[in-house]
Image (cartoon, rainbow, N blue to C red; front, side, top):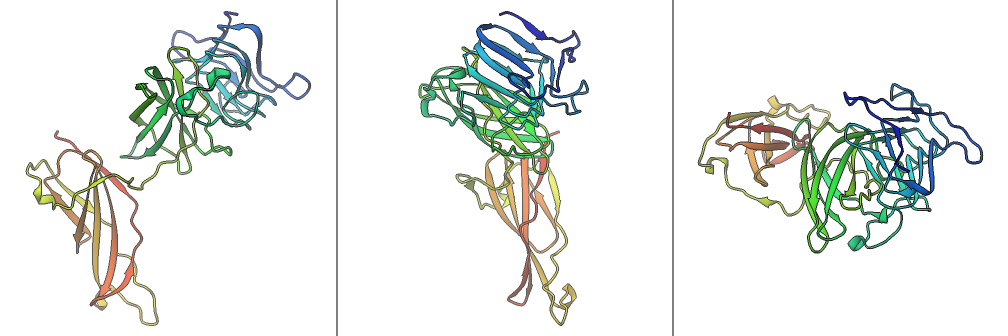
Length: 355
């Protein structure tokens, strides 16, 4: 009990152990095993489990990165996270015990779950009221959706269902790809948010994080009970969506209805779509007309406007400060006949400030 495995130096850089390359055999292959009634209040900080000292080169262990059977232990912490990677099983397995805190670790590339709590393999589902008992009290993980409001920002909105009237820390992580299980690991720590559940045990949250999601990347999260230190398994892996969710208020008022003029923004649209090829090629010069229907979404005001334009430059005047998204559909017509219609363009984001 009361041991520290690894540690950090005063500058906050890793100053721990390399625990890698453990092979197969009875009781072998586990990088770190903490089992027994005296496994209490241990700290594991700043270790490289499953990698070389560079934190990148794979030297995986055949078993779990950490096999834990005890209570009130801490793995990681602010500026003291471990790397747990490339294990042949899980990143962390908790067989029994409660009050085990896992925070700000980098967990990735493991064959099993990033964190697996309980004797049976596989993720534990979110249960209503979070009233079940077991390893780390089977703490529920958060449920959420992810959007990209603008470049370099990640918007996470959702809820946690757990013990009523309790303070929790939600930790968010970025991953290059979705784990085969559909549940997360935690390749890169993004940040955290504190929430307090209401009398029904619900806490809604909306947090804006700095980061960029890779093409096939995803966001995951854990929940930490700040009274017990019980930490959940990783949530489902969530990829960003560009779809407008139901419940948005739609305003069809023209832009000129905005009274206060803050700035003028020119939104360049893309080139008109190519006409449908036929024996006689059609072109803009052959009498085709292009019409654009632009969708302007105010992320800040939660409104949507549909705007029409005959030019590939649409100038909007009088937009209030805030965050916006635009997309458009271009239609080629000849007379009253629609010749070709493009798919919705990629969503573009921009911001307006008073300065």
